[in-house]
Image 1: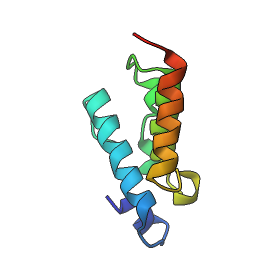
Image 2 (image 1 turned 180 degrees about the vertical axis):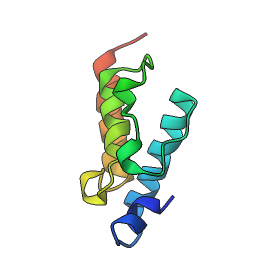
Image 3 (image 1 turned 60 degrees about the vertical axis):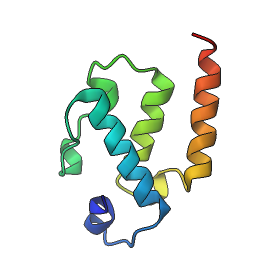
Length: 91
């Protein structure tokens, strides 16, 4: 989904894919696709979904409108996920 970049007049790069993955995770967790109007996207933290605060912050960062506010690349995202999962400990 390159909608975010189109809205702010930017080209697509790895961060576009990060947005798309975040939007897919949001959809899977909430059962609702994120709104196309970025001002109307309900933050995951307000959806009542039983997800850790760390994972919520990661997904919300993946879906930020400005690509500069997202993870720079898949490696940075993976590292954030690994840190977040390590903090939870074994289930």
